[in-house]
Length: 495
Ligand SMILES: *Cc1c(COP(=O)(O)O)cnc(C)c1O
Image 1 (cartoon, rainbow, N blue to C red):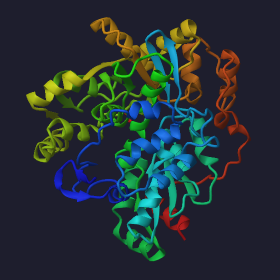
Image 2: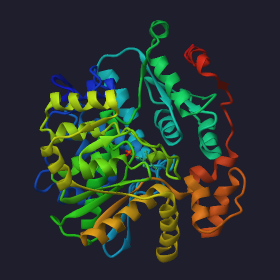
Image 3: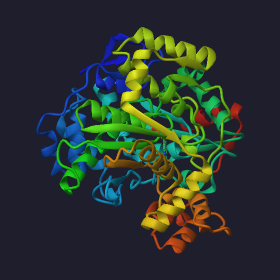
């Protein structure tokens, strides 16, 4: 199977090339040329498999140039008991008779990014060998919080790679900062940048395009790479857990094979919900894909009207990982729905960069309406939902997950559609203690990591070990640089 750019379907790459490259040379996203279909007995076969085996089964159908035994090794390291605190890896919890929650945060950094960022480093490292790349890949990341830590954990001590994370000094929570600065591993580096996320992001982009720096690093045996969510190696591992959830529901007798389920996803960059769409395209019985947004509701409007318009107020919300106005992975969806018309995708993307706006064709609008439902929820609604889920179901959820539950409720009220629904739960509530405690009515919050114990005491729910143990970890990284000095930091680390 080959991979093509959403902006040029004639340039074909192997899976290993697509993963090593990340982004297509023309700026498009690398996407499978054709999608594999689930065999008629696939769900029955996978029902009795472990999560690791399901991952191999699904990923193998996309990665011709990787063997099943290779993938088994990756799945064992990525999703093993030393990384995930439940053996199901991505367990499905019943919330009520027809609502299920797919918990994607049992990994080392307690957010769903682990599901992909535990696997990507193995895929990338093996791809470099397959491509006969002799240099070490230096992964550069600018992060507003969750991605940086998940990437550090994923790439730590992975052969042929090293990773350097820049975060904004004024832009991450105290706990997120501590999570990153206590990172272990021989091939990792962390540094804060004076300013906000834009400063860090702009600085990293400048490093990528700094020719003298590239030449110097090539001499030293390094090249830059990215762990960005548009890499195919991050989307593919996410398809697995939707299929796995369906198998778990079959196994529990909650549904019969062939029954439709709806899937509701709290969405930012459109990667997670795109993976759910690909699972449906492979033949998983999925009814509606429900796209949940916070007050940055550019996707709600787009899915309802066919007009994507980023010219709007940006809100900082209590679900910060969804505070996004350009959802990069949407480009893959447009490619799909245009029937692989790369010229049409190029037009939309050109409009987006010129005016921040595009309007899709009537044909695409009709397909979007058929596939997706959408809705959004503000901070007040998010808080109310966290409080109510706790009171009514004794189920503690984070603000991102709360947005999804709220939008699912709205959808059911508006449509009467009572199809069993799976809600993607994307972070542990203990990553967002202040918002969650606030939603539970607690007004006096403890300082620093004390807030983790406080949420555990108030609810009687145990904090995940990686967060509970933070207070005992040694801080390894202290550097803060200005944007202009990021380059020195790179040269210092890659000596
Ligand atoms: C990244 C993230 C999201 C958004 O996922 P996308 O794939 O960007 O749509 C939602 N919730 C949490 C907790 C995240 O970290």
